[in-house]
Amino acid sequence: MQEPFWPAAFKGVVAVGALDTTSGQQRRASFSNYGHWVDIYAPGTRVRSTYLRGKWKLPTDPAPWHLGGWAHWSGTSFAAPQVAAEIAKAVQHGLRPRQAAHAVLGSADWLPGVGPVHIPHPGVID
Image (tube, helix red, strand yellow):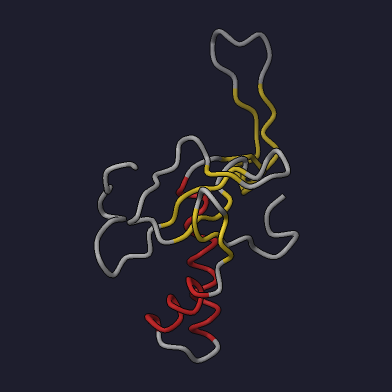
């Protein structure tokens, strides 16, 4: 078990770990925090998100890199917003923030060897 990591381990905070879903199976990402203090896991490996458009060239590069407005990112920083979005949707439907967080955490599936997981609707993560 990993030692608690703050601020995620504070009481009243929803601590989100990262899942690796890139192989077609779900497992805890190798870089993710884990332990009794992590409340839920969400996809956090190769999450497609926005990026800038343009060209990038370092002096040592033979040719510029073309940046197309999208990139794949990994980290708990990309897992946490997926859980936050679900909590925000529950608040929009009339739940108080704490109730919404409990509802989302309570609806998580259990993944043996990992813990509670949240997988967003298809199409949100590719």
